[in-house]
Length: 388
Image 1 (cartoon, one colour):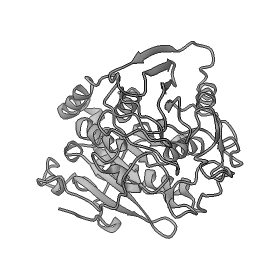
Image 2 (cartoon, rainbow, N blue to C red):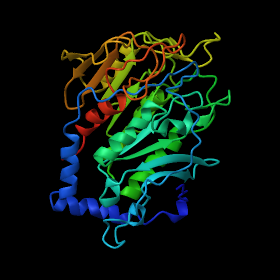
Image 3 (cartoon, rainbow, N blue to C red):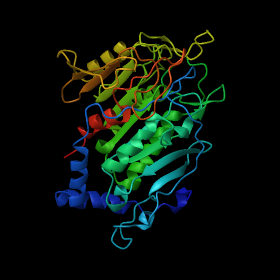
Image 4 (tube, rainbow, N blue to C red):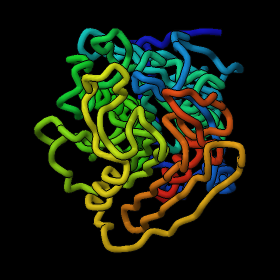
């Protein structure tokens, strides 16, 4: 069953904020404790998804114009909510939400059954890459970023996939912090994402400590941009194959923020689309029309400075669960109050690491790492940031 949920028909959100207060006062419900237990067995490597990121800064495949689906049963009618007194603000399953911003935008929300019975543990904002996939990255089996829905089902978190703006070449993407990206639209994508985060945190009564953002490729760049401009509204970020701009826009984009931001940063060492060593982004036709970025190590180092972690040596661990992929995955943990976890996917190109959605090697995108699952390692990192 497909259903649209217009903004005007959302149910009153205040009861969910009250529910958080009651849960805290009672030390948490048995169901909430069960969710925590369910999440405690997650592997450090997670599961691997796959997807090629092509010449347009894409982080996966698929077109993505599906509307919305219901996961069934009567969860959307307030199951477990005490006769409707605490009905969730959105139905279970997939809902396309019209966002009142600019000329009109939309975001795709995924609500698991667990989040119909009690407030969600967290909100994860997942940003697609450039190149046209758009909301298609939310479709299971279509793209590695859809694996955040698997996390949602198990952990009782809500996931939202905002849709980017149309770039000058007609494809969907994000206007991030690059000042020299000639393909970017003139839309205020940062303002749009602020609106999405504000809407859902109000509707679910979630504090910023329970809000996370993740993205791949251009979506990773946008995640880094959001963390620079609106760090007070999220608790941590996770990025795959996205670097900071070499020539940032003036303002917060150009100034290293003083507010720390826990970050998981993953990158393929053989990525030439979002160059691991830095340079022009997706520069197939020459001209560097999508701007220049610093390298993956420079991006990591910027977050080490931001989080006050320039002193300690990282703890390194190597993962190899698929001997037939591009190479091993090295995890470097820079521990502290605001940690940085840096994943170097040795020999891998631009595709997001995955074991679930495999991506064929191409001359443009390169090979995929299949030793870890990006969505899973991101959640493992996010879960450590959740309040007690």
